[in-house]
Length: 101
Image (tube, rainbow, N blue to C red; front, side):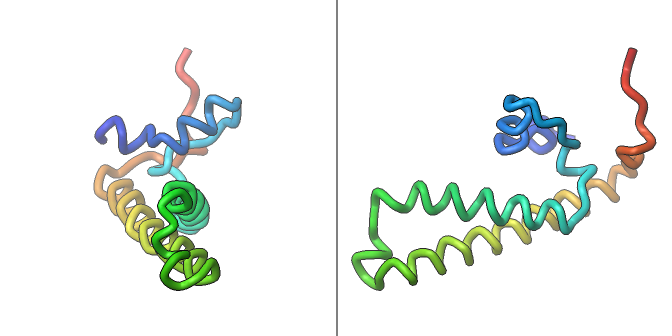
């Protein structure tokens, strides 16, 4: 499995704060979907805010809707990718793995 795939920036950030979290391949589709929806919507909103292209045209409610829709759409793709990749590689469930000595 490709390194950026199992060590994505959002999971790396959580680990840097001391939160112990399994890589996305070992998380459920539902967890990945909710997690990536939130992360993607927040990141897209932060990147989109300075530009203000949606706000200027349609208003702040439409901008929030676009950010949420983008976050959900991308999260759906990412969640499917991680669940498909986990089954493709036949990964052992996270709970059955033992720490390395």
